Length: 332
Ligand SMILES: *Cc1c(COP(=O)(O)O)cnc(C)c1O
Image 1: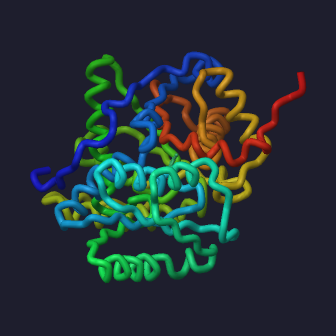
Image 2 (image 1 turned 90 degrees about the vertical axis):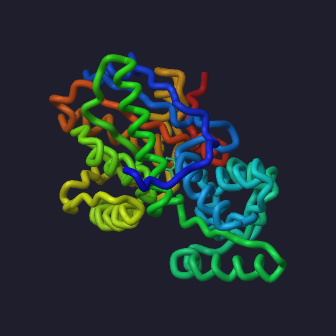
């Protein structure tokens, strides 16, 4: 991997791996958790690993402004705003919101604290025009003498993927230190870049793990196509090429529930109970749905034969605050 892109160091690495003792006993499988929710505070979660590569490219191009987009409670946008402030850059966030002046809560509160220039657009404009809108914001900044760098949704493009390629190298090193092997790795799939990086590393490093994604929006067919595109783009940076068939991309579908960022009571009960069981708080949009799905798949036998499973906690805690009123707390 001679031509692997370079990065700046922003995340607290390596993130710890812990065994989930009681959850393992409940499911009858050894389940470990990699705490990528601990990559930082303002910049916590999985996006910072991707931003280490994307922002390096931005700086190399002389950018002083980062433009990106996401949902109203986007962890990726909040991490981008945090990185920008930390490096003395500007950030401009295009957020999807039906309400043109939403309450500053959760990630949005942090975006505000960090001084991001925030533009709200509705779901339709987001779906159909977000790239054009970011391009026009870049021109707006350039007209004022700045140089803008556009990061696509979730930093799930070729360059961002290297964040999870290096995460898999980190996991392999931790396996050597711990004296065990994770035969299965499970992560939540939202825009596909995290899965793509893990998948690519697994192939390039011949680790022969089973990499399983649980999608929290869209469907398995959508992500197989999307992840192949990201993998193509990532490999433009490399000398080696691996041939990947769509059916090699294992996405377990069926846990989107009510839709992106919409929670069902059983999902929130699961997150509440898991916090009490293991002392670890999951988020409602990604990790809560993913681990809830993992539990159901384990009960169906989808992980029978698995010796040591590693679940990637990709962060997202701030997203719990705006839905505080939906979380069921039984009356004492
Ligand atoms: C973005 C995100 C994911 C999904 O990662 P992708 O690379 O977009 O698939 C998972 N968990 C959290 C907390 C996230 O913010």
